[in-house]
Image (cartoon, rainbow, N blue to C red; front, side, top):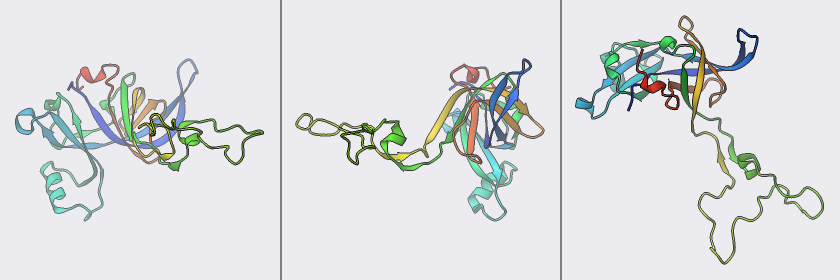
Length: 220
């Protein structure tokens, strides 16, 4: 695992900004942090290298006693969300350290992890983009039907992975290689070029891009 950096945040929505040559760029605004380092894991003690990041302060009295003790050891208040970031650069982090949006700089690339919007049980036209049956003569009350799903005698079954109706969305999604357009340390805002998964107000994690090699450049 290469050196990497990351931060938790909340998706605020999309807007657009203009470049110096007056080109409109669609961006997603993320309330990034501040996060607190609540644990630093080492190869000798834990068997792997990682840092634990906590985000979004929890209302007083909501945390369990073990959780309160865990956060107190790092000198932090109980937080709602806790994640681990695998990295070989864990030595650059300290317990109780605060991570803000300026951990990323404009021009860098990042991956964003979130949970996609849930659409419940959806048919094959909505879920997989099927065109459906013919809409003219010869089709009777079967316009949104998927059609055949397999042969009869051979193989006498439906293959695994056949695209059918079912749960749509509400799954973990990672979007790779988004450019960081702006990083506002004062307001803890990150502006990333393009769209990120999840609804407005959803929890996301922004980490160093593995596709462009940003994760190998180390923690700044």
